[in-house]
Image (cartoon, rainbow, N blue to C red; front, side, top):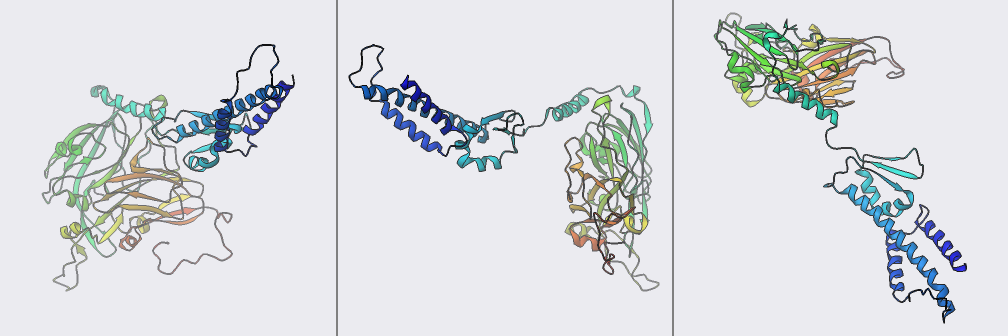
Length: 498
């Protein structure tokens, strides 16, 4: 009985030694285990005979040491288990994305001692279980796409494999808008045959405050009209060439699937009209442009625009981005021109300039502009909103050379659909977005404080080349967010304020 009492006491001590209050390290437990094993080598087997032992002290000591060895071995085993689980979580080659490992504090205390900081830095979330305050739950975020993302991608794979009977599709004419206006969202939940009519023609525009320039246009505007459709739609595009200079033109749409994005099917000489059909398989925001040779010249002269393909998956067969109060269409591009010629009658430099291929090759633009002209988003048509409203900008970069760093001074993009990707989760509270030539992005912001917000390419010297636009926000002041005892005093001559 006395031996059992001592065994119980030793077991209690062992449990305390393994608890969160223990200061015993994993190496100390390992050493204790080794000592216990070495000590056990001189033990004689405990006999079941009722004959008393010849050495009473040794017979009393045997169960005590045996109990101590068992406790030490148990602690060593539990510690090794904790270390093994930690190693599993740290091993990048082991799939632990779906595992939730629960460790009692008793087993974590020794194992976390040296490696916990590195482990926790690489573990997205370490939270205490609400059900048991003395337990820690380590949750590993999955690195692979969620099932919902996989199912969305599978939807579009299935869309491609199941072509519709075009003759049965309802026909509608696309609503085409000039920048900065955007057509209204599509609310239908079925595919349609969408007719898009584009006409090419030259037009003299005031490209900078100083010079006019003969732009090549789609439907008389730079950029060309905004086209809105839906994944699964069949676009019937008719391109009519009314360019009296004799240049051929066509359409290369990044939204179309097939060689050249449709360029070969739509190539039209002067006076011709070409019609082709394209089934929209991929949702997103895409640039379209003319790809007639030489391609850089046609783009640099203004032949570009945006097409937004709304997603078609989701409940009820239709899905789009979260609703906002206002939507705008903005494209950035570069202007390359020769020095002005001298007017023979006045002897003064001409107010009209012509395209410069050498400047384009050197990637040295004379102007970088929004929506085709230096003043397009300042004096002519600044963007507008009221406090409390949400604003969405469909932004494209026609290039043809420079990457844009879109930034709205004094605001934040609460959602950013980078690269026109509308299936992946958006970026949140982003300040500046990089958009390469031929690329696009969708950015959402909220008008909180009234005033003038400036759109810029944050390659900031470009504001002196024309890359400036305004978002004018009207409404009540918000001194709790933005205010001072002194009135605002913008710097004299600054291009960043109206």
